[in-house]
Image (cartoon, rainbow, N blue to C red; front, side, top):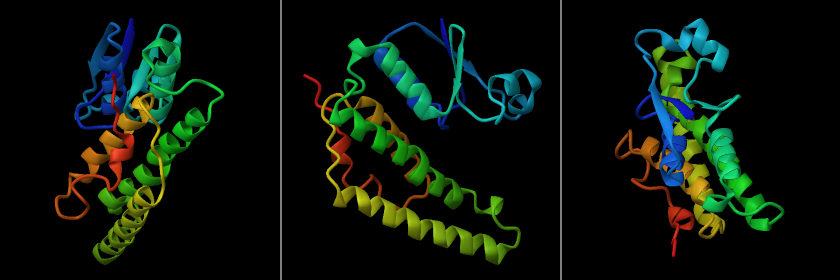
Length: 189
């Protein structure tokens, strides 16, 4: 049975939603973050980075949200959660999923945790202000580009939903929803 190591309101949200969409049996294993489980030898064997999520699927152990979501879509192609191989839609799906996971999410990490990049209060504020400016520029890209991926873009939509949840953590700082997020909407028929 598939196992997802998770913690609420973290990057495990997207794989959890994908698993629910698939309707396949899976087990949720909640991480004891406060108890130090992320630093434990057992967990570090699963993910040497000590981060959430981790997916166990038979003999396969995966970490990194996008990789987990793509693996689930690929092992359940009948679900239509990602466009077929060798199509332009799939290539664009890779692009947007990678962009959300690396470019936008990583900038949000700098914004939400500026103390990881600076020690002094004024420097922390400076880092956060620069990151906020960059996030706004990145969000503007979404409006400027056509990224309609069609009904088989569920994996990209889930990543976008996770990003929207992150944006909502600081009300009034960023738009309540991602500009242009309508492009990730799925109209399943």
